[in-house]
Length: 209
Image (cartoon, rainbow, N blue to C red):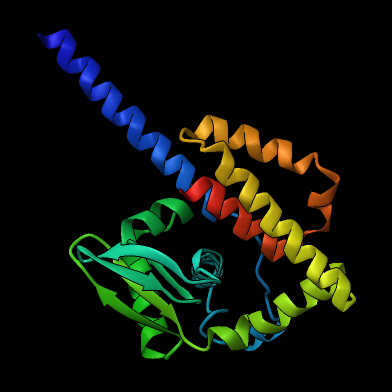
């Protein structure tokens, strides 16, 4: 009976770890901008810990709308928002947990972030996110780099839809099969014509379902 209980706990942990790994794989993609004006911000540059926390918040914030659960309710994170916790940030950055709290409170009082608290974590909104990242211009530039004519833009969209249809037809259920399918797509010459945003959305659809 004890052995069965141990196996059950192991399976539960393995399933949870797989789900966490899958979520990290999907979300930890892309890049952000760091404006040199940040060097003139006395709050961010107060010390290395303040700077580290600010950069990590920028890295963790979503740049597109994604569904999440906060306070037991389904919400949609907007660009510039993230859900995290004081303990997690402290462990990630190797900074004292109470200093993390002081830094976040300072950023909030200086109107750089807004916070909503729960018993388990907190929803952080980076104020003026679009000024920091200028995502509209970024996406436009990415599309311009790969699709410079109207005909080519339409071709890129058709390729994107083609891959989506191909994925639906496969009816893949497990993560291993989805990862293998994604690798096969990348070997297709047509895949190289996708914009960075289309590649990101395609990965989200395949790995996120």
